[in-house]
Amino acid sequence: MMSTIAAALALVLALLWLPASAGADTVRIYTHNDEKEMEAFVADLKAATGLDVQVLRMSSNELRARVVAEKGNIGADLQWGMPNSHALLAKQEGLLEPYRSKEWDAIPARFKDPEGHWHGWSYWFNAIAVNTDILQKKGLPKPRTWADLLDPRWKGEIVMPNPGTSGTAYLVVATLIQLMGEDRAWDYLSRLDKNVAEYTKSGSAPAEQAGRGQYALAVTWDQAVISRKAKGYPLDLIIPEEGVGFDLDSVAIFKGTKNLAAAKKVVDYVGSERAMRVVAKHRSKVTRPGVEALVAFDPKLFPYDAARAGQDQDRVMLAWKTKFQK
Image (cartoon, rainbow, N blue to C red; front, side, top):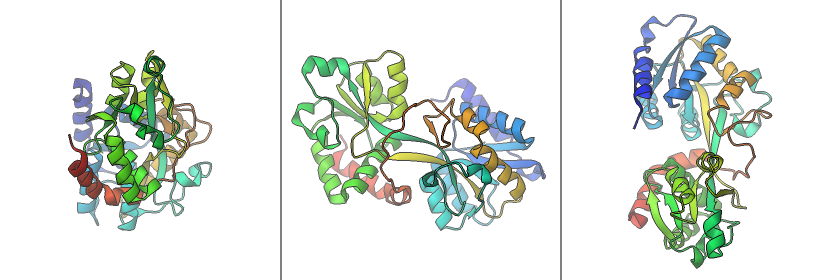
């Protein structure tokens, strides 16, 4: 549930949405970023650029539907906080204005569109968490691969989020489908289901439950494990040898923007070391090399096809519910 402060900020952000008053020094931004972090991001953006910033925050799926419906007259200059799958689809649909910013030259190619239609500024990834106390007590080995989770010794010891409700879990399923092929992935998930004791609604809940000793192993995401380990929970974070999928958050300028110059200033800012250091206080990883965020190590990332995952999401989630909903 949104906190009172977050709700108040959401209201403020909505009230600031006055596109009719936008001038040359005003930039209008759509975002799915959390209210608290967006408050910090916008404050520094204003200080760095002198721009007047108007923000409208909605969920990523709500913004996706809005942008598609507004094609030809999109009500913002750009979106800062867009799942990469949505950015890839928006490029295909002709909704984005290309801009190759010099501030992004130092950022690896896999985190940005080669033509400049979108730029990825932060990401998070799937991870496995194990309760080291339980492993020692029960003599369970630390898994090294995704296949290791199928060992019968893990029966009743695994908790993972529900791919029907959790983006964290859908990232796992989509990664496995791309890694194994769809038929083998569904077979794997059927076998894994025999070992799963509980499917949770949220992606962070499994880390909490494993940390508290309810289960030995959790399928979850990086920051959920790192933050609880820092609090003293007996957790180890494991990246399977095959790699993990990752979700890249993007910034992209909309085609037809009324203020292209201001939108370019935002993209320049987001790629700068200054902005990345602000983001690093709130996010698991940032894409600029040399800037350390909340997760200090670099995981083995599977070459995840976000566009394919986005196109397949409704179909795959429905199939998972049909097969495994408990």
